[in-house]
Length: 83
Image 1 (cartoon, one colour):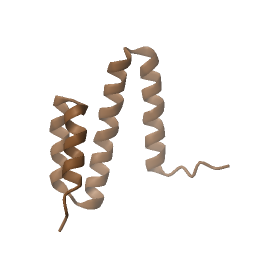
Image 2: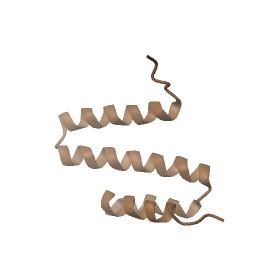
Image 3: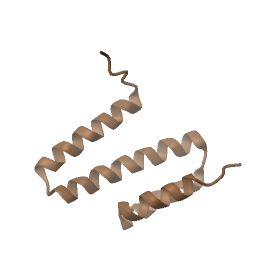
């Protein structure tokens, strides 16, 4: 069985492994926040380039406020109709 590992799938797998490693070596909430923010930042950047939804890049500065602000904001901005 092959993994069908594209560069993007490899990135997600690497982030999962890094998150697991951090979870064992740091306080779990800190590790989860770091892994979640890194994953959201990469996803936001890649999908914004594909969809050309440049407004969604406002998510990146919102990450200073935490994942609880950045993820819902990204989903809000992503769900708007692109013309």
